Image (spheres, rainbow, N blue to C red):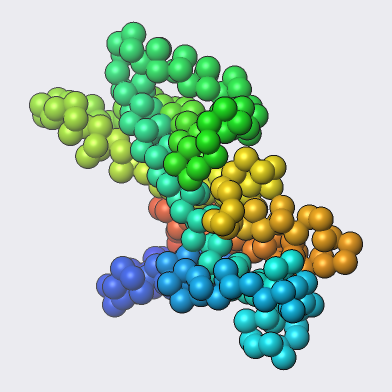
Length: 309
């Protein structure tokens, strides 16, 4: 960066608020911007979709069973077609977003909080408890996550709480190992050593000095992990051991449309497309977050996406 570029960045930071700066950085990456816009629509569907369309999504109309898409003679809600019981797919895709997002968000939140807490202890503490924590993570990672979820849900009742619990447990080692590796490096830096010399407590050093440094990395991982957990939940619902009817998720809708793939492909296509677009958007947004949260790379977005030598 040249001196002129540095002065321009300083002037922009002074003239714009933090929200405006983040929005400008998001607009600099058009793929990330449209990914965030799509995710915002998905979140709004998850929040307000069941309140507005729950009755329509469950109302059966056998005269319109397997109605083809792009035919609005029955109403605009049938623009994506209807399922085997004549229920509009558009309304069902919107309503199903709530359970899909709820399971993924709860599992990621629980696993990230527990995994980060254990990783902070394992990375900062030099006691033998740190080794036991790592061995616990190794035990969990020794089982394939999806296979472990299948075994547990086969033994337990497939409910939202059980699915969240199983998926959260299988994702804990990701945050545990990442946090520990970051803490082992950060705790040797000069500002941490200075805090120790000044008499700061261990809790203050961990939560006020170390955690803010590694937080951007954890946010990026959580964004990617959200997509993985959502795919895992869809896979479990597709296998029939996830969320059960009358509740609906995108994965369950794909499974329900499987017998009709030869003559009514749209039953599985639209919820499958929602899964693909949401996963793609999360990956694009995580790539943007990796740059936006890195002080050494953020200037590329602050300069409007222009590359400088």
